[in-house]
Figure 1 (cartoon, rainbow, N blue to C red):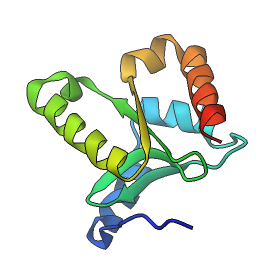
Figure 2: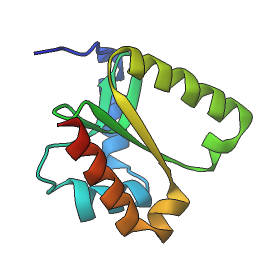
Figure 3: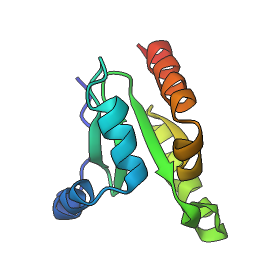
Figure 4: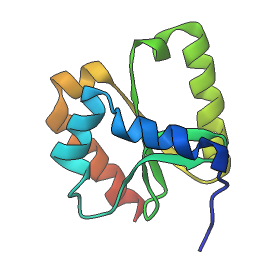
Length: 119
């Protein structure tokens, strides 16, 4: 079993984020991932980052991106995060909040396809 690096100093923040999910995170969690056949965790600490959703079995991260992710600094941070996770062998897939609100079924199918490929 492979253990991921964890910054225990982020535990309180991850719990706060879990309790205060965005409406898009809540929708994806309660309408799809919570009861998905393969377990996902919310607000998982990996290294010095907290990811929106993580599936250990598929080694997959799902990130939901609000508007701040499409500004220069947000894009640079996301690239850095993604490279870090890829070095750990974890695939990252990103969806915008807009996509969650306009193409929810398509996103669920994409996630299901990606999990199936990785198992």
